[in-house]
Length: 182
Image 1: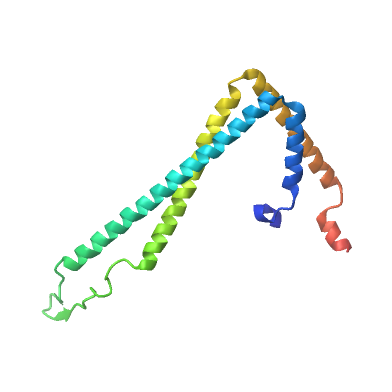
Image 2 (image 1 turned 180 degrees about the vertical axis):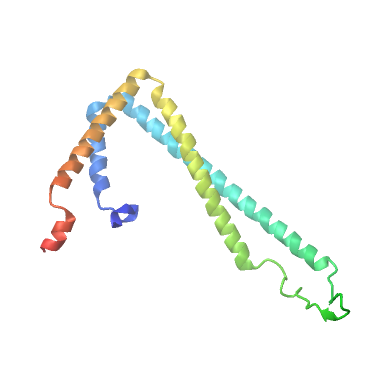
């Protein structure tokens, strides 16, 4: 259950990285490895640039929202407010003045707005950058059909080895059995 979160996974990524490096060295030539590195750098470049743009747009949007809120508060304070309500039966009730309670946006509200909008912009920008980077990397890899075929074959071999390791781990003693046998 804890392994469903990336932070709690054990050192499995080291094994998979080592296996991937072996396949890169044995199944691909130098030109293919350079092509994959170039494609990988495109993804990270797109994601980085789009994250920066998203962060900037988030901060700009938060600034615009704050200025609109200030304008609404100023307009509310400037407008004429009723001081009493007259009912159909002739009685009148005073209306309390709430202008002091609605003095303007608070600093905590502004801080929360800037924080949430910048995080939202960072997330949306990063995801869009990842998508555009992946599309660009895919076009880079599929440009040369022979290289594409070698890369696909190496990836299939890698997946086969990963699945073989998973099968052998599942056939071995499970953690559940280890926990109750001690």
